Length: 250
Length: 250
DNA sequence: CGTGTGTTTGATGAATTTCAAAGCAGGTGG
DNA sequence: CCACCTGCTTTGAAATTCATCAAACACACG
Image (tube, rainbow over all chains, first blue to last red; front, side, top):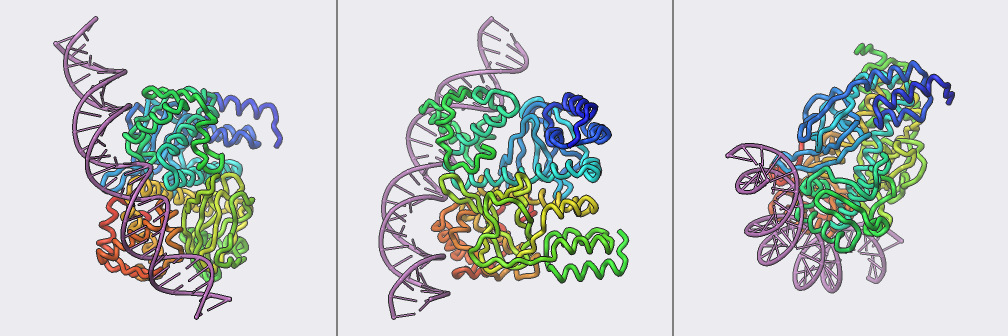
């Protein structure tokens, strides 16, 4: 609760050094001492670049770090034994990768960069050690994990109950909202993923995605040329997804 | 690492007092002192009965406790704003409920007892406090949360990539394996949920579930009468679900 | 022994996949 | 600078899967 001057300075320095990192955002609301902030700082000092198309990690790799996306865009996917791919998420600036690895100490999915990207590795054992001394950090890690569960349940609702048009509308709204939260336009943005990746994420074929895009275009809800998205009618788009759950992540 | 006699005794007493609680199982592998075990004991001393059809908690209720299922069977579900229901999971003896509430301090789903059941409430704030002093407890809580994420990703693969027959086969195998792990027969068990609940879980209609059951019956893979299941050909059933992911939870 | 809830099966129709072919864009090398 | 190539996208037509509607059935419970 006590927010002395020097501490705030530290926090801002820190924020500048790793803008929009999830971990940081989660730590900001709580009172940390200068020393604590410095310890946290050592955790996330590094940067790693990942080229477009390259894997940050693959299923089965041993867990070393969680990753906060600093720049760029990732997709995560699981593979079935017979080769079918399910995209489980897209991660943008300020979002976290690797949480599913904690369960077995091995990553349970593939994380692929969709464009040239940059991440902050957060060595997990250090994070756990630090979290022992910083209860608020631990609490926020718990929250982060729990949020991921809620997000996944929303996706289950999507795949289990919504038709193709509703899924695509929900997907676009979700992207729009997340971009907005990070200071980007919520009405005008670029898709970083292929139709096929969107389809896999939404449990549909790429051709179906194309057709649904055509529908949204015909209804003048979005202007979608290639990967450039302009949302023309946000309320109209929302209305297409009444099916979508608590206003949490949509 | 040091497992002195008295400590083991404590652990066994504890285990008897709350057989098959997830939390406990997660704590067993690690070295706890007698005092620590006692503190843990105070957390999970209570029992709460939940009648068939009753809600353990509902979406929006403030998070007080996580719950370990001691006896019985639950389903969790989320509701879309326009009333569509998605079952997000079935929880049996020894499994945990409420993890999704950590993210907002409010439960994000409804937990309904499918038969007369009994749970151990684990007051969350106490758990977090205790976890500060017991790093291994904290680690295991992290793992528990991460496991749930992995499970959800497997479900996404199911809903996104598998046809109706494969989904049902996967569902039965999953139940079979979880029952087996808890000492019950993996070949002969009773479904605690309706066809409709199975359908909602698998993203299908109840009629489709009925038809898929008929298919499995025709192929002599299972003998399924009403809610009584006898698995006749486990390898054959497995083969139906090649699509299913890492052998983790299936 | 009726009543209600849950299950099964059939017939029909709608939504999505599959297969196929053409169009478009960006990048490379002649 | 243009031609070509490759990968991604779009659109059409046919096939398939699943949902919907409807009716009969089974079972448990009061």
